[in-house]
Image (cartoon, rainbow, N blue to C red):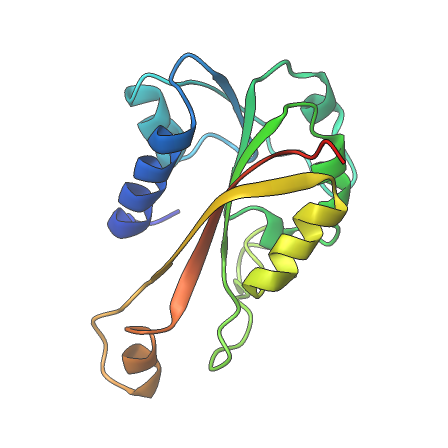
Length: 175
């Protein structure tokens, strides 16, 4: 997937955020297939169960039937046509999720070879907050960061000060 080029900054910041909000004794359902970050979580002492590649737009049986304390969704919701549905189906009371933010100077990502590796949504932070609120979640903590590249040009310069990732910790709303 990353061809040996892991997103070290994103993984480091995500792990720090996760450790701050989620205890290792809590079981995690990680939306998405087993990936390098789910392996990092396991190595840090978390018990992690991954979904198995089902289309989370239409099939959330696994999500509804797994007994986990926390659901994580790292760069998943932008790939779904209707992320609201799976957010409502989650039975856990805690959610840690991240998204790549919409960049005003770049088009939405679309892999030419992998139909699963395409972004249907690229959210602004307020849009993601609103989606979570409508789906019954209350955001308790959030973090954003940039993702500079080592390329030359206007877009690479803009990436030095334009936030690219948005990470939240939310709990099921009691409203």
